[in-house]
Image 1 (cartoon, rainbow, N blue to C red):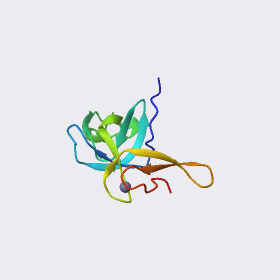
Image 2: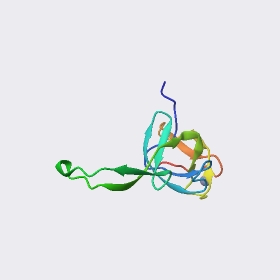
Image 3: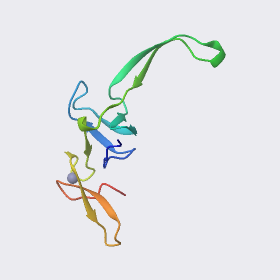
Image 4: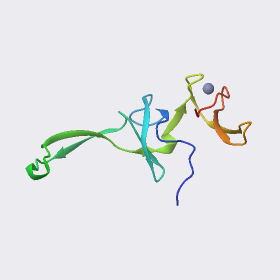
Amino acid sequence: MERRTLLRRGDTVRVIAGRDKGKSGKILGIDAGRVTVERVNIIKRHTRANPSRNVRGGILEKESPIHLSNVMIVCPGCGKATRIGRSARPDGTRARTCRRCNVSLDQ
Ligand SMILES: [Zn+2]
């Protein structure tokens, strides 16, 4: 089952648990309750050279996904990791807001 999340690709998040606790970066992708965050949870993949596909052998460093619950969005207004609230805009659409300072998290 797809878990609902208010996080979106491109959001800046901070890692709040795990090996990369304290790091922050942009969300590169979201899938099945997990997010891939730039420069977070880097794994080394040992790849074999494959000349026909123009792949160089060696150790490739790559982000791997971490669980949604281990990240929090960073508010552009107060700069803190925060939970996400929802509020109605004057035009009736719903915006994500910072629960600390009520600044909109959407442009
Ligand atoms: Zn804020």
